[in-house]
Length: 236
Length: 236
Image (cartoon, rainbow over all chains, first blue to last red; front, side, top):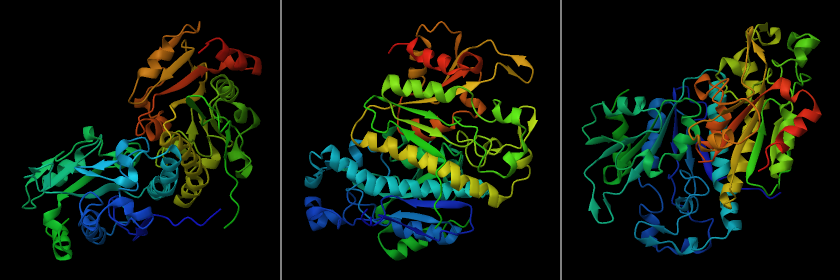
């Protein structure tokens, strides 16, 4: 058996806080692919390859809440960890207006290979982390951190902070009620009905965990300074 | 790292059918415990230690449907694989009227140890099996097989076949509509609200799989002959 390089990292694994932070789109690394899936350098930095700013924000929350953080170390375009293996969006042929040449007409073997290399290890590790906490009655809220682009298919988005939930809306509502100074909306710019809550559905709902998916407009967290300021603007 | 004996088996892993069969309570094996958790020989054979007859039935369905089968090889009393790690029923101090001496006042370390030895490997293996099928678009219905005791807390149960579901009732309704000659009820003798659909909630619902939990009254499948006859009475 070859040594498989895992495509995720866990930081602050023994964090004593009451949350676990997840950043599925933390990375735009395409090194594991042939020719970067055929993207040009501008595309590789864009919102289609990852969620710009989300990792810095997630790390800030991890420190603030003393929470473990699990983050992807490969691009969502190789495998989008917030999608199940049969979803077209898991290994998309197109993202917004951009064709992804290296994802065209993937064979079943290639889909299986990416599922085994990316999806299974990430979600197995997260499942183990959460299950171990539950076994010893550690309170655990699951918070996933994402960013979205200010303009999508030509449409500007006014919302600045979207808070999305799966079956249980209580943590989402509690976060939405906090004074952040941001234009905040529940279930925008997406909701569970748009198929964007897979991580929450896979882990939070079956384990009965309070949960929320934070979607921050990426122009608000474009620099490390901006990413670091945002969590401290919302004291616990 | 010591060699951990896994407490499950997968049969017919490459089965070409459209279902995966799960039998969480297939075994009453207490060999991994000190003094069999303090149970007497009669209790070890009773419904509290496992689901009598369920394994034979599950294996019959696995053959009939050419479906992979994942089955526990340790008793539900050590860890009930159809419960999350923070549930009292995962490692119950009492089952129906029977105290389980070896489960009294379990420490967090012991709960963690059993979660790591039983719950994590079983559900990680099932997750991997299902995810790999989805990656290559194999149709996959998840069917879990259980049996229940004819008398519970002194109350006789008239239902003979209960079909329970989590979020999606379509397969359950389709199975309930089949002529089996059995007194059949949806969501009896339990429903999802009773906390008995963890495996379905963990795997079927987030992956969008058709699913059903079959609960057969154990007097109807008390012998291998009875277990083997039942599936063939319901041709696909």
